[in-house]
Amino acid sequence: MLNTLKRIAKDLLAITWIRRVYEFVNRVVLETFGSSRILTHLWFFVSAITFNREQSAVLRGRRDYYRNKHRDRLSHVELRRNVHRLEKGLIMRPRRDVFARDYITETIEFYEEAVAQFAAAPGTMEQSEMDWAHDVLTEYFRSVTGEDATVDAARARFVAAGYAGEFTGKVPHPKEQLSNLSYDDLERLVSQRRSVRWFDQRPVPREEIDRALLVGRQAPTACNRLPYEFRVFDDPEAVRRVSSIPFGAAGYGHNIPAIVVVVGKLESYFSPRDRHAIYVDSSLAAMQFMLALETLGLSSSVINWPDFEPLERKMQKTLGLSMTDRVVMLIAVGYAHPEGMVPYSQKKELDTFRRFN
Image (cartoon, rainbow, N blue to C red; front, side, top):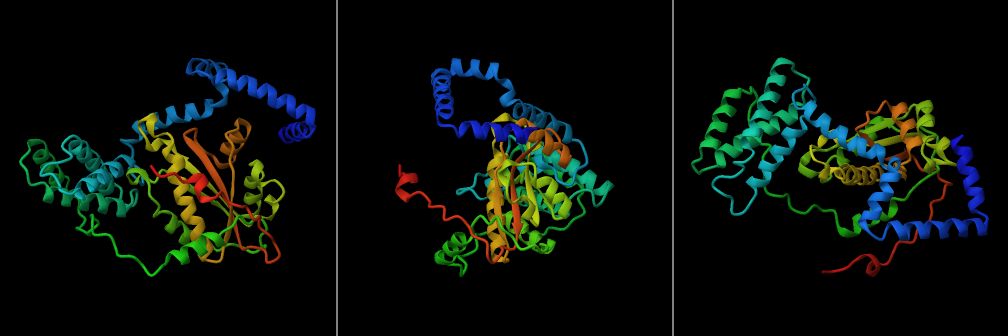
């Protein structure tokens, strides 16, 4: 039904006079309601369904953030955030004698819950995250030299928490010097990576996907939250089912050996001010992931994901997503077909998109 309506709309808009009438009406409406914030509010009040799913996801994400704070989880996002804040304080120059006074008690509360979970149910929380939190807190209490009752009380609770792990050195350190990778090498790599839509019909090794994801994981992410999940599908039937949902895979979805759905996790945030961070952080990780694929001989293509309720609903049902999960993009992955072609895709000139000051 949806594809039929889409085809009818495309056929109608291919008729010149209908397209011009459609554009004229759009311009009048947008000029009117886009002329002031009051009229804009009125427009979205009347057409609330346009962004209703995202609004609901943001609100439920905030709700789930607080619900999850006292639940056992593999990763404690609130602990990750505060430990990273401590890391940033540790690298400041000059470093203050006392810092993080306003959130160190909260951080220790998060740490105590994590230690309790780790001790009571080993394997239910990431060992690496627990070690990192322990090491950074150890370094913090070593580094705070000023006298402060709040910090002293937090230090006592940290010791009393009794984490059994050893200090592993996961603390701030000098940045490594430049590698042998040159600018020219990188420029060749990013120029070589093109959006490939025609693939050899051979399986994509899962080990190669994982290697590329480890590179993607190193992308910058606000307060080290990593608020995303990469859902990888390589079973032919699953790939067919998932690739049939977005409009962007039309015409070549049947040719995709593996497909990745990048999902943003809104439960990572307690404030609506951070609602866009899932798109920023997951896109940074996705770009590094695709560049890593290229070095492994694999090609990729980003499949645009529209904020369109019928497709959102279908993807949610197919993947078993919660309402706080937001699909950011899909990525087709495979070995490029030797006879397949890629678009030239002329980029904008530097002066067009770059401005100083």
